Image 1 (cartoon, rainbow, N blue to C red):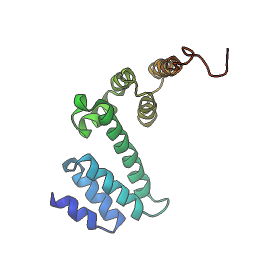
Image 2: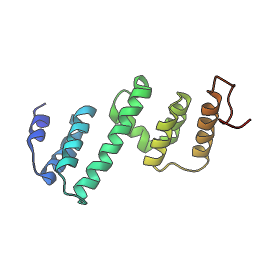
Image 3: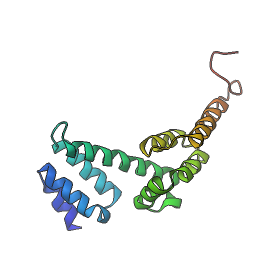
Image 4: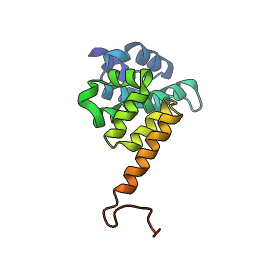
Length: 144
């Protein structure tokens, strides 16, 4: 409610970042994205607030994309955050099954998932990409 409108008026980067951290659980995903954008726009170049706001903004955008791809299952951005932090491999497998291969790679990179699971999912993405070429039944373009 009112805390969001007040936060929009703040012009000091440290104060805005502090308020954002304190009240972020109360705000919607879109409100948080807006406030992180504002925080980035008023933050000093190369400063810690810019780095932290940029990192949070990047994660919020990933949560938004996960909700678009797998919304009914997730419910809210907080549920997505819990999965990204707590069980990213399970989330990655589900997103891969939905065909959201770019999102799989972005989530894996942001939440430092590597190893066999990522190789398996990258292989599945490559296979799906090569299999989607309807003209000649798949394969690498230009190679016969």
